[in-house]
Length: 272
Image 1 (cartoon, rainbow, N blue to C red):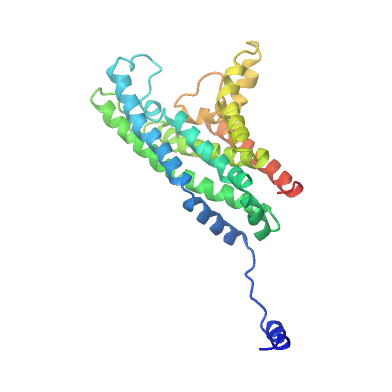
Image 2 (spheres, rainbow, N blue to C red):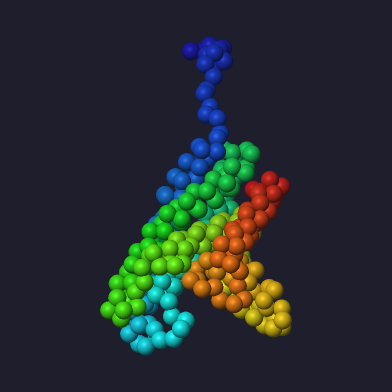
């Protein structure tokens, strides 16, 4: 076949290219997420911490006299290991996007999606959905496992008791927002170590530092920190000072939205 003939055929039968849509980008990010070796390992760790350590912690607490006092609550006790599970969920959220910057794969992702923002929205949507589903299942199992341990001590509570369902499903919502905060910090900082340090500095260290403030400042500062605001959803009776459960969670989710929006702005302006 001559060069002229080949050129003519290419003109007559141009390659068909699929349109880049948000759903196709979401599907692409879902394939990336489930094929990463770190994904099942990290999420399995999160579930093991929630369920396994949660049940063990409840057993040790009630069998060593730790169930006395007015502050004890069986629902909160069985879900207490969300504090450790958030480490795994947050780290994976960061690595989901910072890892692509480390390997250079982000260039291929943004070349395939020139508008860029659909990539960020897809990563947040896919990861948020996965964490929400998995942590909802883990929270329910951890709750009923903990109640099975507490039954012999007559300390178990039912899902229908006031505030219990909110705490159980609120734990999954809280962890989902932690995952989205991880995605946001990963996109903002683009360095895994820096983003992970920032995330857990905000969630774990900042509340302790805030306690060093003058006593008159604490009620006006501490309840509005991300982890403290979201944590109000996980308490049957929120501690004082604290926001109302759903208002606190809305504020925490608002932090994630603002950070994702900032990440979107920088994603458009910065080089890959």
